[in-house]
Length: 303
Image (cartoon, rainbow, N blue to C red; front, top):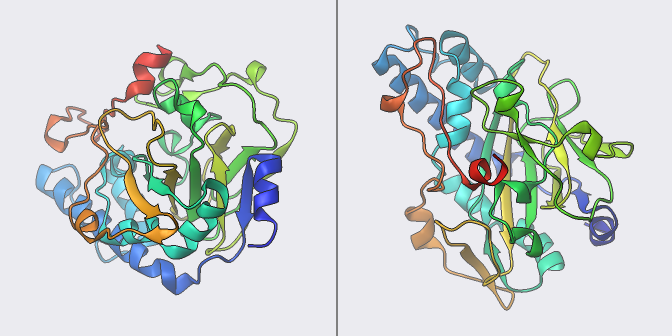
């Protein structure tokens, strides 16, 4: 992890190469596989798919489900449950040791996290240029929030990797709702091309085990997946305790106090998805699929 702090201060993000061994991430992948299997079973129950794909490899499974049921991947992204293994990774010592070098010895988990299940050629899995703080309430830009982008497969331009704008440490840019110009089912924000200088872009191209840490002001996006497999990744975030998170409905999770790990067993055993995003199988009326309807502070903020 040499020099990553300097890179972070200079560019607003830093790559930490080979932070994890592949076997350290396998429990997370197993949990995600179970989430996809549960989705498979629920869509069968609802008659949204006619075939079961539980025996398919995880790289292909969600693609098969999506072909039968439009929006299945977006639904999983928006409403999937946090699992115990994801929770354990969130407070993993390797991650907290890195974050501590940026935040100091007192660390809380920010309530926002995501499973990214980027199936190929899918607009609802392709995230436009944005700043993370734009999805939160105003004032969150004043709290240093550290996000970790953790790929669970090798990532490159072909399978829809992450891109970041270098060395942007300025104000919150104007954001717009993508649904007003693109897919009407989109919940994403986007920054207009005229408002963002993208002359200096970093494109993530690395193997499983390498991660990126970045602050909530850095503009970033994901490319479209043109491969034949699902690009899986996680977003996890941290900040200092008692600073504004930008999320009213869910408290931060204390993870370290004075450099000492907190007892998180009760939290891990009671974890649930972020509360302010809502999606319900039974409430979905689309005849051609099952689409989420996540509602968050960003919708009203940028309308």
